Length: 163
Image (cartoon, rainbow, N blue to C red; front, side, top):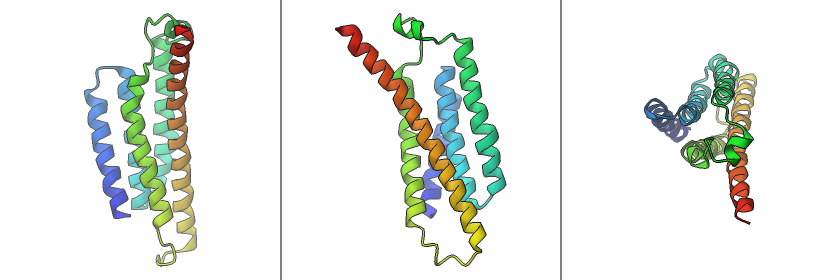
């Protein structure tokens, strides 16, 4: 689990730096969400489950709400994407999706490779850790699916507009 901690820490630092240095708001929010995902994983590994609940419920859900409000303010609609005025480009999603995929693979590896019989803590604590890890896995999978939907929409739109 130590390698999972180090990889999650590196992803958290890198995503935070990218979130600060991005000039586009939507790209910075995507990196910020990846940073929050990796921070939640670090809190799971440290055993701070209350912080994980706060991260998942307040920060990650809050950043999704912030992302939607930014999309509404910038008037990112289907007709804007179809007219190629401005919109969320699939290139914006590339970096955060790669980081989120690495984090998901590392998290799954950490859950699968842990030998729970060697841990001398209570059964309830192991149950809490696995529940929060699975919640984080489902949130990461949802984030990856959202990015895949945006990329697939743009790909199909370009494919159909060429015909």
